Structure formats: C-alpha cells, structure tokens
Length: 525
Image (cartoon, rainbow, N blue to C red; front, side):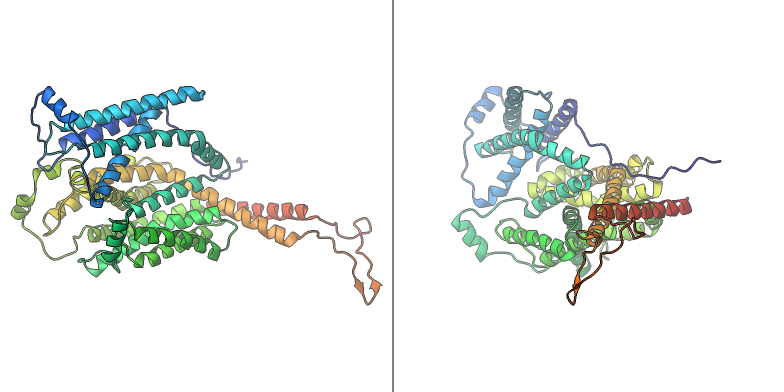
C-alpha cells in the first residue's frame, strides 16, 4: 500500500525582521548615496574647486536664510523628506533595549549623528560649486532628522506590534495592501506643496491648470495608456477595501473607495505642483471596483491550480508587455535619428548613475523611480510564474530587466525629442529581482485569503440558516393549540441549536472544499 498523499495547506511567510546590523548597513548605503548625489553629481559633472579650510569655514558660518517664494516649497519639503530614512536607519542601528530611558538615549545619539552628517555634507558642498548652501535647507533636513527618529520610536512601540498581531491572525494581506494604499495616497499628493497663504490660494484658483486627459502633446494611444496605468494603480487599493470589509456588499465597499478618492482629488486642487485631471475620478473609481471584484472572485478558489493556468499565458503576455513598454517609452513612431546625430546629442554625464534624477526636481525624480519600478516588476512576476513556485530566478529576472531597459533607453537616443535615462536599467533590475523574491510570499497570502473568505461566507450562510433556534414552537390555529413535534425519544428528529447547526454546516462545507482541492491537484499532477 502506498502512503496517503499529504494535502497542500498554504502557510504564510515568516515576518520580516531587521537586526540592528541590518539597519547599520542600510544607514551606510543610504548615506553614501546622499554623499554621491550631493557632491559628485551636478550640471557640470564633478566640479571640485580647492579652497582653504579657513575660507570654507568662514563661508559656512556666513550661511543664512534666503527668502524663497512658494515655488521653492516643493524642493524644501523634498529636502526634509530625503533625510527621514537616514535618521530612521541610524536609530535602528543601535541595539534595542527594554528600558525607555535607554531607547531615548539611542534616539538622541541618532539625532546628533544624523545632524552632524547633514552639516558635514553641507560644508563639503562649498568645495563643489555652483551648489548653494542655505540655512533653509539645513533647517529642513534637521526637521527631517527629528521626524525620522520619531517615526522609528512610534513604529517600534505601536505600529510594529499591531502589525505583528495582525499578521499572526492571518491578515498578512491586509498589511501588504494597506501599506501599498498609504504609499499610493502619498504618491497622488506628492510633493505636498499645499497652497497655505491667501495669495497662494488666489493664484492657484486663477491659474489652475486643469486638463481633461494627461499626456498633452502625445498620441492618443499613449494618453490612453496613462489613464489605464492610473486605473491599474488603484486596483490594490480596492483589494484592501475588500479584505478589510469582508462582510460588506460590493456597493458598500465601492462607496468606501469613493469616499477616499473624492477628498484626495479635491485636496490635489490645492497642491501647487499638481495638474488635476477629472478623468482620474473615473479611472480610480474603476480601479477600486476591479480590485473589489477580483477579491470576490478569489473566494474558495484553488490558487495553486491558477498558478499553473497563469503560467501557460506568459508566452502570450510577454510580447504584449513588450509592446506596452515600447509605447510607454515613446518608441512607436516613424521618426528616427542616425547614429552620428544620436552620439552628438549624448552627453557623457548622462551615463553617470542617478544623474538624470539629480537634474530633475526631487518630486519628478521620485515619480520616475516609482514608474520604473512598476514598469519592470512584471518581468520578475512572469519569470516566477514560468519557473515554478520555489524556483530560483531573481538573478535571471534582474538580468532580463536590466538589458530590456537598457535597450529601450538606447533606442530613445535615436528618437528626436527624447532623452535617455541610463539610471533606469539599474532600477529596473532591482524591481524585477524584488518582484521575483516577493511573489511566493505574496501568493501564499492570497491563497490564505481565498480560503478564509470562503469560510467566512460559509459561516454567514450557516447563521442565516440556523436562525435563533431550529426547534419550532407550538402555534394556535383557530384557537386550538397544535401538538408539539415528537421528541427524539419518541422517534422524531433531534433538535439542533444554532451553534450546532452552524458547526455542522461549516464542517460539511470545509470537507467539500478540501475534497475539491485534492481532486483538482491529483488531476493536475
């Protein structure tokens, strides 16, 4: 006799934990990136001007405030936000202690180290003109340090503990989709330069650049792609509403989504650097509706079997994905430059990592990074689908995404009116590798949600059928009392209470689901 085959039960992935050594490594890497972008990158490339230490110190002491208009508010906010991760990582590099006083000392030390790092970078910028060093940006980055340390302690004492409890209850998907939804709202409102003064509000209302559809100056296919991308971005937000309102009907969940989308759209009217588009109200509502519908369609489904089905469609999806990438890159036109013209237009500084991000505003640079991550994460997802659930392929995913992005940026060199960003291949490689590594754990969370939502529906059905009590009460008809039904001792059916009825119904439904899953997998194997 052969041993019975063990049925597959999805297990959630282990929660991510970072030690203080991990935080130290992240702090060093992030600090090196700040130094590189603050000193080595510039409009003229590396431009070092030797001056004496005494002269540099005098210039540094003479640094003062500069009266800037509201048009510089976005850059000020971006400088503040740039050092929040640095302070967070530096604080995490100190070993955690149980005593509050010790943790407060760690926070104070992290603040001192971070502020000294900010001052050192600003001092070093005096040797790399034409960079400007003002007290405005020093204050902004100092505020960012305080915010980073506050966020670390708040997350450690309140947020992480609750997230861990939520994860242990089996709601890991709530954490993932909730985090994505928060980042999406921040992306919609970036760079947070609200009109604060009456003059700003008046100027904003008089010259509000309202457009119907984004992508003015591009062909209709590209503009349609932008609207579809905005809709796709809100699909996970709809999934989040579905998993946090499992017992709510579709209309109620959609109403919750509109109750969030509408205030965010109204708030974007008062952000100076944002051009509002009314079409986004429709596209984002449609994305939320698709997300809610998708989670409803997963209830009780075997995602292991769907993994197999989705893998069969990768050979068709990948060519369509390449066409979309070419459309997004502006390559589907009939105008081209010759190689000599393209090489003359190429600046050597364009080949430096992060150079294009430095030349753009910090808000535009953040949007560019997000768009690259979203565009090339499907490479890792499709390779994971084809190679199998527990396969290795993060390196292959990074390799394919890197050279695919490099080919697109190289093709943009010979397109008139387009500029190439040779930082994108590195971001694309990271996006594909991260997506490949994240897919097994993410798929497990969706599997668990599909099973859990089916059980909740079964629970609701059982309660509805059970009522308060199954045993009927004697009623009167025409004034004559009816006889009660026979008891079990007299040969009648046993009387079941609502909890007993519920448990029996749940057991029957669970046995049926388990039998269907085992049968389907046996057929596939």
